[in-house]
Length: 111
Length: 110
Image (tube, rainbow over all chains, first blue to last red; front, side, top):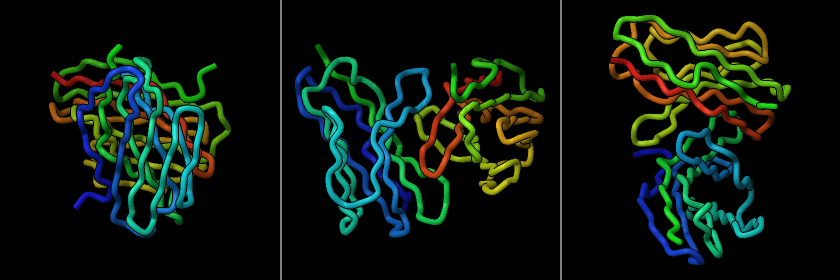
């Protein structure tokens, strides 16, 4: 079983839609949760970072963590064509510095 | 001013050759990494250095050897390149849990 599972998609939505991206994880030692966005032929860039259960909002983006279910989500409101990219969840253990990534979900927002 | 820079951006080489990829960060971070991204976009850690000291060494063939001359640089040398080494290699650095990635080196082995 992979440590972090993420639906690879691809996901295609119309402009203005609400997008929901999800990951599950198996290791209870994971304590820090991140979402990265990766445009084609670019490196991943950090979008959101949280370490506690609950919601964290940043503009159109909301990161949600449920540690009891080992489930994390990223919501994108009013999606834009510029949001088209691959979104990767990434998780870090309390004790370490290693980022464990999900497979990434490829998102296309159609104008 | 690029935070994490890698060179070269593209590398096409024949099987059996030896090649190096260089990485430099100007963020003052203590920890640097090499990640490999395969054709399915899956990112997997290869190595991690903290202040020039190797702290993570995943199951990577011995043909791959990282070298950190100082904490701002982490280079990756690959011997006897194989077709399966074709991938995008990303360098990254971090402070606590804030990671910054380079733009990647696309390696194609023919």
